[in-house]
Length: 257
Ligand code: PEP
Image (tube, rainbow, N blue to C red):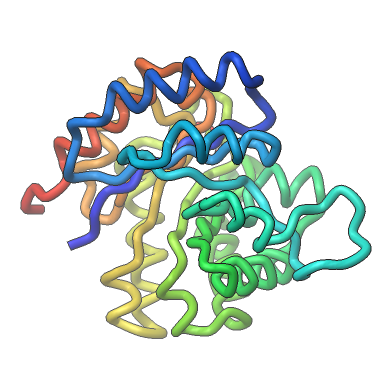
């Protein structure tokens, strides 16, 4: 049974004062939920604050990126071990904003994933097609190449320590979520592709959906059999919204499909 997982991606938002209020409200809102799992991925400077405020709660924390090398002359970069020093559970890897704005490739993502696992973190590997690719009808080809591109380097045994996220780029931050049926179709495709490599890996892999998830559409997404939770951007900055999404995941968790 795959437990639902809801992960906040704060992106480059927040400050010490606002984070404190938001994290405390999230903790208050989810502390009685026992079936699903929750996490907040904060900007690197706030990892210490997240560790201070979330230790001992049922909300894990993580980073939004780690470098593809262990250490060295990479000004401004942060390694997997630095992030692990702050008690992180998760790190997002290969987000479309990293691919688009920072030119990160599948190869970069694969190297970050391997180091993240070596440092004891759980990578959340993001895949998804752009609007042009969606309109050209090549979603499956794009997602397949992103999945295979990483899996061929990371290998099956380490892939079992990864969480996948399907995030259509056209749905990120646009308010235009994929419909539950559209998202389910791609999640099913990802799981079938994993199954070609390893059946056990496919059945255990958690595949999150990301792209304008809000309290109004979360429950319909979470009831789909291959959607194991959500990666949430904008709505994760509003505590009531994020808590409601967590509640929806918890409610569906453990239900027979
Ligand atoms: C994201 O950036 O991972 C994301 C899903 O953003 P949003 O929820 O704002 O679309």
